[in-house]
Image (cartoon, helix red, strand yellow):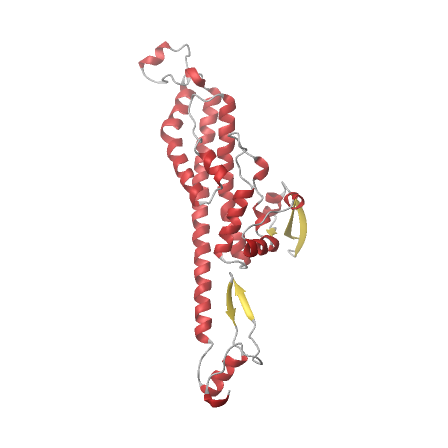
Length: 295
């Protein structure tokens, strides 16, 4: 420190201060050089670094909070669409004028006098859903799918996400299954980001890449217009240290076959103490309700 000049950070013989990594931002503690500069030369070389780091952490937090908020809003919208779809299916199960032929005929007005059916109440409920409720709901869902970074396969399948009275029972089952899968995936998204936000171990950009990897590896479409049920609720695989490290170093992560069937989670015991333990696929939501957390 000769010559009355501030010392240089990182020079040989100058110990580095411990680093606190929060949301991928390095928040340093005062180093020996910082302390010496302040003590002997009244020069603050630490506060500017600390201030900038804290600002960066705040930006990351704000980005997470915005994503989670938007995800919750999309999930709530999906829940409304799910209810509308259920009402449509209940009505269609009891309706008369459905299928490729009868589904094109009117269900109200004087022309219904030519139908051989006395009660068209359920037909009218189904038609109201098709004409007034589901189109708007599905348009919003498709938009949310794009914003939610759904994979290419699922976005392509969403273009066929249309319901009306002309659908056969089989076609309606397929389309409804896929749509309900979309709703479930949208419910997964805020859980995924909330988990990484609470862990504070990755930046938002890495979280986005992890989510995109999950979407691509586990599409909800089965390729035939229906739902690939086994591809739901696998998001905890992409919050693990292994997944994070892989995405940060290579941009991608592919879990092994064994990892797809067993999830390592932090599970609380009866005393509230957390222990890492394996959880079988299909039991994840049950353990979440008990307070378990993904690694």
